[in-house]
Amino acid sequence: MKLSWIDIRSVGSAKAAIVEEAIHARVEGILASDPADLEGLPPTVRKILFLQGQPLPESFGNADIVVVEPDKHGEPSELAHLHPGIEFGRYVEIIDADTLEDACRSARTDRWSLLYFRDPTKIPLEIVIAAAARSEGSLVTVAQDVEEAEIIFGVLELGSDGVLMAPAAVGDATALKRSADAGVADVQLTELEVTSTAHVGMGDRACVDTATYFREDEGILVGSTSKGMILCVSETHPLPYMPTRPFRVNAGAIHSYTLGQNERTNYLSELKAGSRITAVDIHGKTRLVTVGRVKIESRPLILIEATAPDGRTANLILQDDWHVRVLGPGGKVLNSTELKPGDKVLGYLPSEDRHVGYPIDEFCLEK
Image (cartoon, rainbow, N blue to C red; front, side):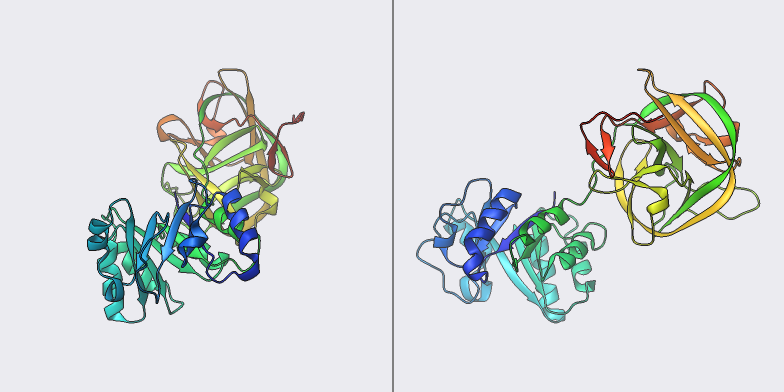
């Protein structure tokens, strides 16, 4: 879980509203320079005291974490020994090679490292994240806005453990929390039995080219209805006549649904460069990937219908060509044109209906 911390030191007259919003949004931490600003906060939020440019106070109040500047306040490990019950962290401003090494050292040894990178490049953060790979401590990186926070959460795939941001207005704390939770939940895949296939004539199909490499047991879920999708494999497996394209899924007819982000479905026809969709492996593990291009072309189409053990159904319309494939149990790669009744494929059968892509509890008949 990524951590969202908000900095209320400079929010001015909006402080009370921003704190109330942050608590409601369930951010993990609120940071202040005055212990009085941490009074009255509920136990659901970590109370962080940041002593930048200040001497150590006589009392830390009810702070859970105290972030210090070691050259002014002493080493966090020594302070933690003197003040049991309080966790201490180190603040490092990275401006050159020496301070970058300080940050790497903190990442390896301190319980908390609060990092501010003066330059906009994310290369130094990548180095610190790599240095912290086997550490039990947590890195929290300062972001100027939510857009930068989203980048920080994804640096080097692992991302910073948390982001500290000073909200510019009410709404920013919620947006920060949303960016921290931008991953997608894993899904429960089901073995479906193919009941029929049929050639259905010409239509438009979409190849979804992403800005990532898929694994051999990974693809995207696609279906004609929002309650029944089949796992379409990427072009990671060798084919005659053409090279592999491990970034591509020949996904299906343009009306089809696939899973996006924030629990939403998207039509294949509305995907474009920069869209985010959900990659899924045969175990139901998910990750968000970015679309680089969608190729829509007219091709012959084939309809595949399949049924779950409980009677629920899924159907998928694909390009009618044997090199377009889906995944079966154990990661078996199945040519779509060779599927026959009784074959098993992997699918996803969500229970919610959909309205403009979002799950909703209402009556909706799709057929």
